[in-house]
Length: 548
Image 1 (cartoon, rainbow, N blue to C red):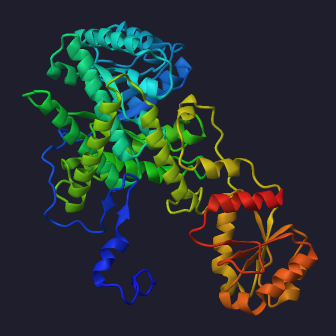
Image 2: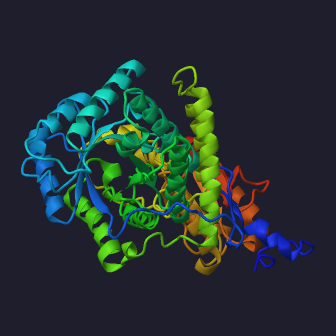
Image 3: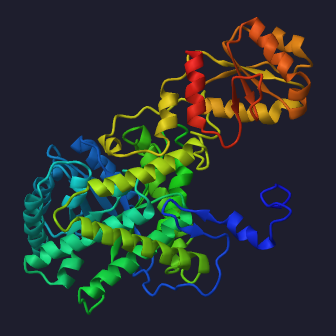
C-alpha cells in the first residue's frame, strides 16, 4: 500500500515501513504503529477499584443557579462536585442541601483561596474525606494571578493544618494550569511532579511527615482525544510520583490520587457537537488510565457557560462508559500492552527530565519564564501542524459548516485562561469574509468534485463562502457563470488544467477577476494555489486580503 501511494519508493527496503508509519509526538517521542515485546513494563498500577468518581464542574456565579445545577447533577448520578469560586461566591448558598458527608467537594478558587476554604470549612456537619480545599499557589502563579511565594507558603501550611483537623485534603496540584497554556504531555507531567515536590517540602518544613503530606495532595490532569497518550500520561504520572515518594523515604505506599478533566483547549466553539465525541474519547482514556475521578466538560463549554442539556450529556458520558460499556470493570486494562507500556515509559522519562529542569530553574526562586518559553515552543509547533492541517480539527479546520448557528451562552471567565487549539481558525470564522470566491469548476461534476470539495472546505475553514459555476464544457460556459467576483479558484482535473486551464484563467481575468487560484499544484498562469500540505492559515489570510 505504501508503495502504491508513493510513500515508499521502489528502491526503499521493506524495513523502511516502520519509519514511514511511526509518528512523533510534540515531546519528540516516537510512537510506532505496532508495539513489540521486550520493552519496559510498569510496576505501578492504578489503585482504583471499580467505578471512578463522576465529578461535575459547578461554576455559575449566581448562587441559586449554581445550587440548582449541583443538585440536578447529584440527582443524575454525579458523585462529587468541583466548585469554581471567587471572592464573590456564596459558598453556603451554592452548596445548600448538598450532603457534604456523602458528596466530596473540591474547591477551585485561585483568586480567593483562603476566603472560600474558610467558608467551606464553616459549613455545619462532617465533610467527605475526599473533599479538598484546592490549594495550588504555584498553579495560581503560572496562570499569572498575583501571589507572593512567602504568602503562598503560609497559606498552604495554614489551610493544610485546618484540612487535617477536618479529615479532608488540602492541596490540588492542577497540571491543567500548564495544559491550558498549551503544554505538551511531558511538560504537564514535569510541572505536576515539580509542584508536588515543592508542596511536600513546604509541608514537611512545617512539621508534617512525608507520608502525611502526600496524603494531602490530589493531582489534576487533562484528558484529551488522543486516546493512547492520555492513558500513558496518567500511568506515567503514577510512576513518577511513586519514585518521588520512594526517594523521599516513604515506606508505606501512598497512591497518587488523580482527577482527570477533559481538555478545555481541545474543545471547539464551532460545530460544538463534535465535542461530544472528543469528550467521550477523553473520558474513556481517563477511565482506562486509572483516574480516580473524571470530569467531562459539557460540549458547549467553549461557547460560554454550559446549559442544562450540555451538563446532562456530560455526566451521562461517564454513565455510558461505566454502566453500559463496563470500562471500569477491569483495573488497568491497558497494562501489558506493549505499545502502551513503551509509551508510558517514554513519557515518564520525558516527564522526569522536565521535572529535573524545573528543579534546577527553581533553586534560586520560582521563575516560570523558562518554562513558559518551552511551552511557547510547543505551542508554535502544534499551531504549525494545525495550520497545515496535519492535526485536523473536525468542524474547524476540516469539514466546517458556514451555515451553522452557534448556541448562545453567557460568557464564561474560565475560557479566558485557555489557549484553544482551533483559536486561529475560529478567529477567521468570527469575522467572515464579506465577499465570496467564484469556484470555477472545469468539466463535469464527476471530474471536478474532488478538488471542488477540497477547496470549498478549505475556504470555509477561513470564513470564506464560494459560488460554484457548476458543470462546464469550456471557457465560454465558465465565463457565462461568472458574476464579477474579484477572486476565482479553478477546480478540475490535471487533464482539464492542461487542456484549458490557462485559457480559463485568462478569460476570467478579462471578465474582471483580479486574483486567480488553482486547486492543486501551482502553475504559471495563476496567482496562488491550494493543495494538501500548504499552510492553510497563511493561504486563507492571503485570500481574505484579496477579497477585502
